Amino acid sequence: MRHRSLIAVTAALAAGTLTLTACGSRDSGKNAEGGDGGGATVVIAVDAPLTGDLSALGLGIRNSAELAVKQANEKKYVKGVTFKFEALDDQAQASSGQQNATKLVANKDVLGVVGPLNSSVSESMQKVFDDAKLVQISPANTSPSLTQGPKWAEGQKVRTYKSYFRTATTDAIQGPFAAQYLFNKAGKKKVYIIDDKKTYGAGLAGTFKGEFTKLGGQVAGEGHIDPESKDFSAIVTQVKNSGADAVYYGGEYPAGGPLSKQIKAAGANIPLVGGDGLFDKKYVELAGGPSAAGDLATSVGAPVDSLPSAKEFIENYKKAGFKDPYAAYGGYSYDSAWAIIEAVKKVVEDNNGKLPDGARAKVLEAVQNVSFEGVTGKVSFDEFGDATNKQLTVYKVEGDDFKSVESGTYSG
Image 1 (cartoon, rainbow, N blue to C red):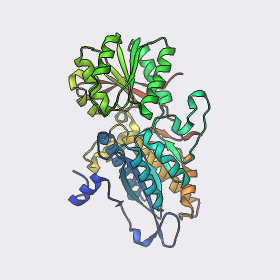
Image 2: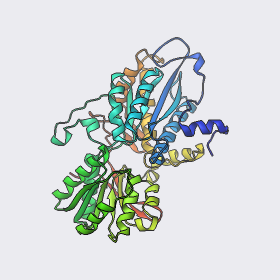
Image 3: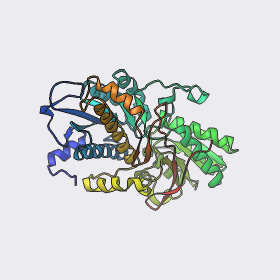
Image 4: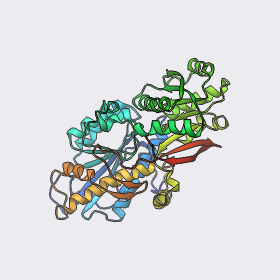
């Protein structure tokens, strides 16, 4: 089903092992950090889970970034530069992410990296990229500490790594946004809070709890799960006996779906609510289909298919023949890749049409100042490297998928 006809190419893409040249030839150019020749080769890479439980999200990230690279070449967007694409699989594991970061740094043609999906994986990669002055833009990381330091919640915001950016908004906004919706709009006043003890899940649950209690909501109980277990009977019993009218889960859909299913099977007919880690059709399947009706998830931005700015992206994604959907972060991945492309263009134009020596540091500096209308709206970054687009959406399970309920920004 892929746009390319060769079976071997398709297989290699699925494994995330193929480096693509959309046009031009590497042999006659110069590499990204300088050299002789008429043209330059610039690699934009992706790190994401391309296999395993979270691959439904990771493949959408990979495909969307690849589409941006392909279109930049087709448009000859940066004269004298041929963009290439490389995708590495981190399997949602921090150790794999760190190995991938080291590999990408060693390739001097790599001038930008899109990803990863998981905040915990990003924690293992940031210093590697920062030491090499290699820009990293995540379309999905939401942990505030990645940009604002470990004491951000205490008001001590410090940007530790200047090479790190993201096009997604953070859990400092997402958790409270969910709390406001649940308390004010859904009328849920007593919530049981569960997390998976990982960076993303625990952080999200913490920000939700802070806002929910501030609003006057009651925490019926708190607990943790091992997302690898899939047998959540102990905490399900606690939820049922707590009298909670909703469960807030900080974690991702591979465990969130079964948790919701088991809660309903135990007789507690209450919605499970979570963040963007739940927002995938796979969640509904794992949660038991019809029994998941009414479950809620927040996700970054407005629904991509509702944005006029995303119409061309959606059409081009379909034309490219990717067999996997762009999923929750496709638009943000495309915008992340395009932010790198815009930075490369600026650096080349500022150097009389040629890629300069020391291009990595110059591209990194240029990313800080990019500003353009992207698939997801205005793309730009604040002084911490966070997205200036703070919009979020609440989605509810209806039928076999999530449907948008309300979009807005956190009013804190």
